[in-house]
Length: 597
Ligand code: FDA
Image (cartoon, rainbow, N blue to C red; front, side, top):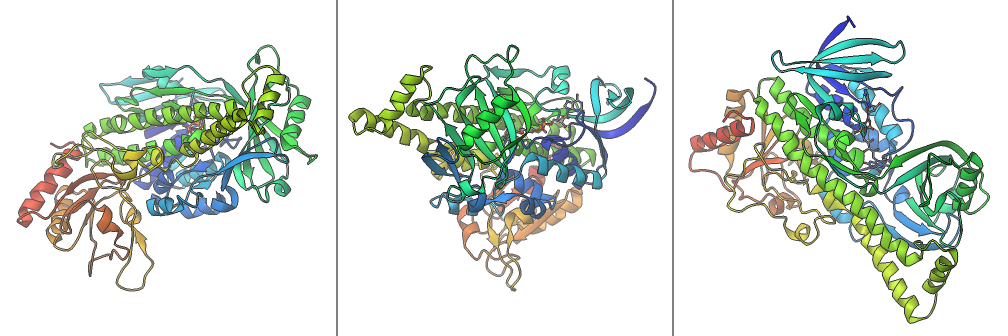
């Protein structure tokens, strides 16, 4: 090994986590290198539900409209999750999904200027990689991280990289190394990050199929269809699976769960067996061509720490879980967004390196909560399977249960009640607005000294933290989205769009002019970007729906300071007695957050 390349930032992995991080660092004006051992971007669809929390991050760098055009949206494509005997056959039940429940639609609209959509990873990744490249991140595929040495004395990390096309090995020296290298992360392994590992829940087989099912979904629109056939025997495969829309309505992923005796090392189903199973799931003679077969594990793993020194891990490298609730790539993107501004501020000399320790402090609890939720969602399906008679090994016992489900007997009625309750409970998976939006941060990056009470979830979030999101400005919470207007007839703007873009933002209102002035002076003094906006009658922006008034959590003259990642850093209930006092207070807050105090 002789050659060496120098860079400030080396990202290992070009999946949702790595490519998003490159985009975000690029938005701060940084260039670097991103490598991927794969030969290109994702070759199977994998993640698809793209939630508002992740989209707000991508909106920050101007990618929302492009992705929205590429995605399959709302009522048209993601309206329901269904349970049925086959795609053409009997339907057992359906539930509204992903913000399309008429009773919940408004909550989604109120929560974000973005709308959730279905965007397969095969479509998302090329957009991110291209954007990162345009921003100055060199992307090298077929290029693998072999190992690295972190030299505390020089502050340089020397990595050994293998070009898998030429088999040539070389070194890249970097100041920051990012492990976005997925579930088998070499970076996590070498850092020896402690992992909390729960027993896995088995494996699943993804069969990607080209088949036009438009005639079957006309009145059964949805992107997830659980197919359950307790009255059939299927060698190799269990008697249920999921048919997931990839492209409406002619490309689908058939997710099969092998039966309990399935042993991968002993027997692999033949192409004909897959073909037969796919046909049985479709339920009529629609032609179907299998494009790909792959397997994945249903994991419950989270790292206890996400970083060591200047090596930071993100995405599946540090949290692994099943796709239920659709939290995977969404969480990867948000990890990257949380990390990027901190790295940028430290590299620009605006913050001290201690700010970087807040990355793990803030994102690890999120990782823990999402792996727990996704696995709980999977366990919750057991109640559906049980009620439908999926669990007994014996075929006649399963048939009997299915018969009972339809019978006019007390047992039948009890079973139906259990089935309906289990289906209704899956709203925690399909309308989990709370788990998507309620992340709450604590630690040095959040200033809570002025809060009279500790944080507790409020309103409906207190009732059910997974289902409901309660917008609020308690420091550490996501900035609430509110549409604002100018006095002149211009396009309305969201608080989400006013904030972010690499800058701190201070929101105040009538009587809070001293806060705006303080923000201006401190921005000048510390060279830290701080935008200030006054909201209210005759102010910079008008709160025409009176929404800001109801969520701002402070008096008209108070202040809400928001970090570049649009999480509330601090708030003041009202203006202080003189401008100097406002300035002194804001200075302490900003300096504390950036590690200067
Ligand atoms: P990812 O695994 O995508 O990428 C890792 C990258 O690192 C790759 O570029 C790889 O080549 C590279 N790499 C690995 N080792 C390397 C080395 N030594 N050197 C160099 N490069 C290396 N999520 C979601 O949000 N919504 C959803 O609906 C779903 N649905 C879903 C369905 C199914 C069937 C699966 C299997 C998964 C999902 N997911 C999901 C999860 C989602 O796919 C997953 O969370 C993300 O792909 C993880 O992104 P990362 O970037 O962290 O890793």
